[in-house]
Length: 173
Image (tube, rainbow, N blue to C red; front, side, top):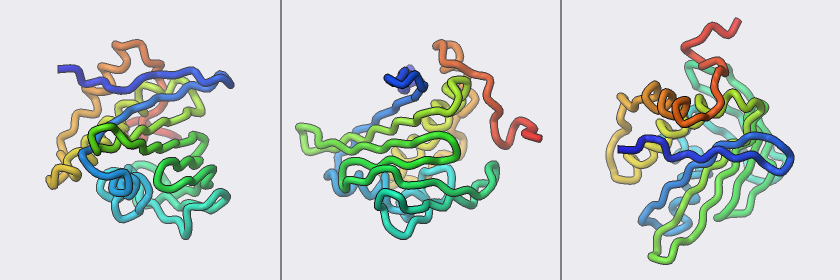
């Protein structure tokens, strides 16, 4: 079984990004809700997410993550129900929803990284998050035993840059 689904990209401006996609047998509008509605994000996103309105320039508040302090980000782009981009710390997160030919919709998550050394860590983290979304989509509870370390080790073995601190595991002081 292959447990790595992310691809590593080098953007035109030289920044590193990781990209993961999932296809759901749902309409675009339903998958858009998975990517943009704070109530839906609570099922899979690592932090709680609060924003008054998804419009460029709006402030997003990220909170209730036991491993990361509360922070804010900025909506960079919003084109419902297809594209949402925002800053999160010094990273950028892009969520794209596209219609598939069979009535399904594809969610593509692109995490543009501040540091290339975060590629393995973040790809592994997004695997865990998307596993929770997959379970939610199937009507199941999230798998609390999602193997972050196994994903991380697989991404390191696949050549993804590593070495960034892991919140909750490494002492960040």
